[in-house]
Image (cartoon, rainbow, N blue to C red; front, side, top):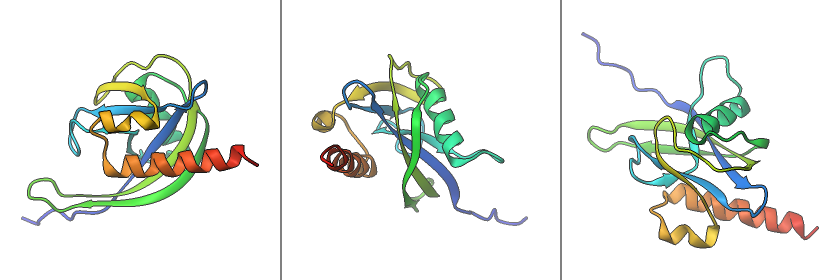
Length: 145
Protein backbone atom coordinates (compact mmCIF):
# COMPACT_ATOMS: atom_id res chain seq x y z
CA UNK A 1 0.00 0.00 0.00
CA UNK A 2 1.36 3.41 -0.97
CA UNK A 3 1.52 6.21 1.53
CA UNK A 4 -0.61 9.17 0.37
CA UNK A 5 1.37 12.04 -1.09
CA UNK A 6 0.68 15.29 0.70
CA UNK A 7 0.52 18.24 -1.65
CA UNK A 8 -0.03 21.95 -1.11
CA UNK A 9 -3.66 23.00 -1.51
CA UNK A 10 -4.70 26.22 -3.23
CA UNK A 11 -7.13 28.17 -1.07
CA UNK A 12 -8.61 31.66 -0.87
CA UNK A 13 -9.71 33.99 1.85
CA UNK A 14 -11.59 37.25 1.59
CA UNK A 15 -11.13 40.25 3.84
CA UNK A 16 -14.62 41.64 3.30
CA UNK A 17 -15.14 45.13 4.69
CA UNK A 18 -18.49 46.62 5.57
CA UNK A 19 -19.29 49.12 2.82
CA UNK A 20 -20.90 51.44 5.39
CA UNK A 21 -18.43 51.48 8.30
CA UNK A 22 -15.24 49.65 7.25
CA UNK A 23 -15.55 46.81 9.79
CA UNK A 24 -14.11 43.44 8.76
CA UNK A 25 -16.29 40.34 8.42
CA UNK A 26 -14.84 37.61 10.64
CA UNK A 27 -15.86 33.96 10.78
CA UNK A 28 -15.37 31.74 13.84
CA UNK A 29 -14.01 28.53 12.36
CA UNK A 30 -16.14 25.50 13.12
CA UNK A 31 -13.62 22.94 11.85
CA UNK A 32 -9.87 22.38 11.73
CA UNK A 33 -7.54 23.91 10.92
CA UNK A 34 -7.77 26.68 13.52
CA UNK A 35 -11.12 25.48 14.90
CA UNK A 36 -12.56 28.08 17.29
CA UNK A 37 -10.39 30.91 15.97
CA UNK A 38 -11.68 33.95 14.13
CA UNK A 39 -10.51 34.52 10.55
CA UNK A 40 -11.65 35.80 7.20
CA UNK A 41 -14.04 33.57 5.26
CA UNK A 42 -12.26 31.20 2.94
CA UNK A 43 -11.55 27.71 1.75
CA UNK A 44 -10.25 25.58 -1.09
CA UNK A 45 -10.56 26.51 -4.72
CA UNK A 46 -12.72 24.10 -6.69
CA UNK A 47 -11.62 22.68 -10.04
CA UNK A 48 -12.33 25.13 -12.88
CA UNK A 49 -13.06 28.01 -10.51
CA UNK A 50 -11.22 31.33 -10.65
CA UNK A 51 -9.66 32.65 -7.46
CA UNK A 52 -12.06 35.61 -7.34
CA UNK A 53 -15.08 33.34 -7.90
CA UNK A 54 -13.83 31.03 -5.12
CA UNK A 55 -13.51 33.97 -2.70
CA UNK A 56 -17.04 35.18 -3.53
CA UNK A 57 -18.44 31.64 -3.15
CA UNK A 58 -16.70 31.01 0.18
CA UNK A 59 -17.96 34.30 1.62
CA UNK A 60 -21.50 33.47 0.56
CA UNK A 61 -21.34 29.88 1.88
CA UNK A 62 -19.98 30.95 5.27
CA UNK A 63 -21.91 34.20 5.82
CA UNK A 64 -24.82 34.40 3.39
CA UNK A 65 -23.47 37.71 2.06
CA UNK A 66 -22.39 38.57 -1.47
CA UNK A 67 -19.10 40.40 -1.95
CA UNK A 68 -18.47 43.11 -4.49
CA UNK A 69 -15.32 44.89 -5.67
CA UNK A 70 -13.33 41.69 -5.06
CA UNK A 71 -9.64 41.91 -5.94
CA UNK A 72 -6.54 39.89 -5.20
CA UNK A 73 -4.47 41.37 -2.36
CA UNK A 74 -1.55 39.06 -1.53
CA UNK A 75 -0.45 35.43 -1.22
CA UNK A 76 0.60 33.70 1.97
CA UNK A 77 1.88 30.20 2.59
CA UNK A 78 0.52 28.43 5.67
CA UNK A 79 2.26 25.21 6.68
CA UNK A 80 1.48 23.11 9.75
CA UNK A 81 3.32 19.88 10.47
CA UNK A 82 1.83 19.19 13.90
CA UNK A 83 1.06 15.55 14.61
CA UNK A 84 -2.31 14.65 13.15
CA UNK A 85 -2.86 18.06 11.55
CA UNK A 86 -0.61 18.23 8.51
CA UNK A 87 -1.58 20.87 5.99
CA UNK A 88 0.08 23.19 3.51
CA UNK A 89 -2.02 25.94 1.95
CA UNK A 90 -1.09 28.44 -0.70
CA UNK A 91 -3.61 31.04 0.43
CA UNK A 92 -4.62 33.83 -1.94
CA UNK A 93 -5.99 36.69 0.16
CA UNK A 94 -8.59 38.90 -1.51
CA UNK A 95 -10.34 42.09 -0.47
CA UNK A 96 -13.89 43.15 -1.14
CA UNK A 97 -16.92 44.88 0.29
CA UNK A 98 -20.26 43.58 1.51
CA UNK A 99 -23.38 44.79 3.31
CA UNK A 100 -26.01 43.19 5.46
CA UNK A 101 -26.46 40.95 8.43
CA UNK A 102 -24.30 37.84 8.14
CA UNK A 103 -25.60 34.41 9.12
CA UNK A 104 -23.15 31.61 9.97
CA UNK A 105 -23.32 28.79 7.45
CA UNK A 106 -21.25 25.92 6.06
CA UNK A 107 -18.34 25.35 8.47
CA UNK A 108 -18.70 28.69 10.31
CA UNK A 109 -19.58 28.48 14.02
CA UNK A 110 -20.29 32.23 14.19
CA UNK A 111 -19.82 35.32 12.05
CA UNK A 112 -19.59 39.02 12.94
CA UNK A 113 -18.64 42.44 11.65
CA UNK A 114 -15.63 43.52 13.75
CA UNK A 115 -13.83 46.87 13.75
CA UNK A 116 -10.06 46.51 13.58
CA UNK A 117 -9.66 48.18 16.97
CA UNK A 118 -11.85 45.42 18.49
CA UNK A 119 -9.82 42.47 17.14
CA UNK A 120 -8.19 42.06 20.59
CA UNK A 121 -11.58 40.94 21.93
CA UNK A 122 -11.55 37.94 19.57
CA UNK A 123 -9.19 34.97 19.23
CA UNK A 124 -8.09 36.04 15.75
CA UNK A 125 -5.51 34.06 13.77
CA UNK A 126 -2.14 35.77 13.42
CA UNK A 127 -2.39 35.95 9.63
CA UNK A 128 -5.88 37.48 9.81
CA UNK A 129 -4.68 40.24 12.14
CA UNK A 130 -1.62 40.89 9.96
CA UNK A 131 -3.65 41.14 6.76
CA UNK A 132 -6.39 43.28 8.37
CA UNK A 133 -3.75 45.77 9.52
CA UNK A 134 -2.10 45.83 6.09
CA UNK A 135 -5.43 46.29 4.31
CA UNK A 136 -6.51 49.06 6.71
CA UNK A 137 -3.20 50.90 6.09
CA UNK A 138 -3.63 50.52 2.33
CA UNK A 139 -7.21 51.76 2.44
CA UNK A 140 -6.29 54.69 4.68
CA UNK A 141 -3.43 55.77 2.41
CA UNK A 142 -5.61 55.47 -0.71
CA UNK A 143 -8.23 57.71 0.94
CA UNK A 144 -5.56 60.37 1.50
CA UNK A 145 -4.66 60.60 -2.20
